[in-house]
Image (cartoon, rainbow, N blue to C red; front, top):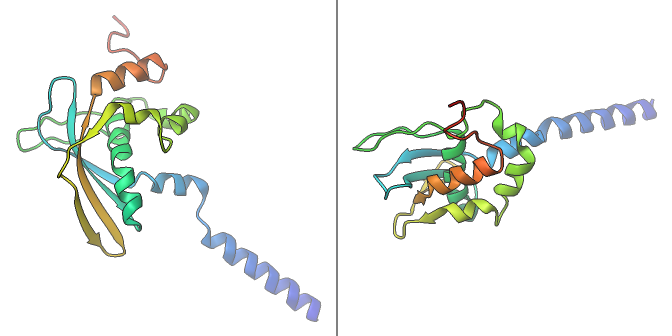
Amino acid sequence: MKKLLFIMALVVTAAVATADAKPKDQREMEQFKYELQCAGNGVQGTYLVRVWTYNKKLKAAQTACPRNAVHGVIFKGFVGGDGCVGQKAMARTPGAELEYKDFFDHFFAENGEYRKYISTVPGTEEILKVGKEYKVGIVVSIQKDELRRALEAAGVLKSLNYGF
């Protein structure tokens, strides 16, 4: 009887532990928890966007802002307003992020290649506390033409001339 109770307790403990753990895909998606909006008109060949990143840790949210801005330009696009023109995502193929997962894991790594295509605008950071999370906003200038060329060269995006 004691053996049966021990086995049942072990099974219940294992079930609770695995139910509480988040799947890897969900953890990876949480690292890109953000909103993107137009922040004005940048110089030719760039996008000027405000990215709002959410995280329980302030430093993690601040660090993720530039990466999330590039991620948003590639995979989500952003809406216009206040004199800004909205833009569609560069990667128009559904599932491109998963199809080129190895490339994007390296591209968005901590000191990844995405850093070549951004510059943050000094003095634009805003920090808000929303529930148990921080919401950090910053304006980022993204060199869209250079970014597109790099993604086309890597074979991730098709050239705008494709099909002509």
